[in-house]
Image 1: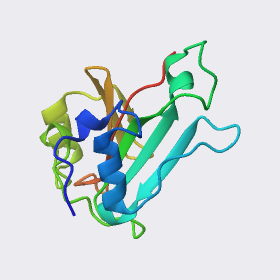
Image 2: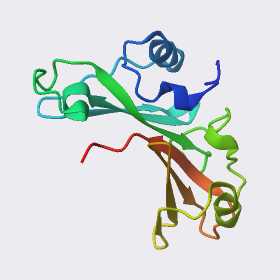
Image 3: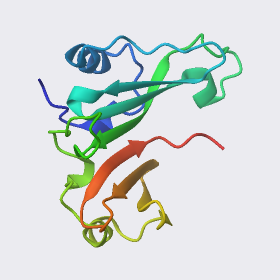
Length: 156
């Protein structure tokens, strides 16, 4: 299976773009499709260790000329699994920003800086870097990353 060379470059792309279509075909999953009344669709690429979220273009942009469900579905989130969840294989590619699943919470803070948000109970940290949110969920001992994700924050 081909690896994702630059996951950050996929954020913000419509589901019908060649890069997204290639990824979906590799994973053997169907195109995202909104259910009635929804503005997002979630696709699990279990064998690749990825989970994707696509968001309706009208909802994401606030474009008043476009009705929900009429525009493209935009990739707004990618979650990378380390293999700790039995439902997902370990993501085998390179994580964004040179992050490694083997890094501890303190390693990641040294690399990315003080997190914008932290939730000690859930063992999660979040950073905003160049309008993209990055988050990490750690093992119980905080000595490795279980899940790493990137997403485009919703407009306020």
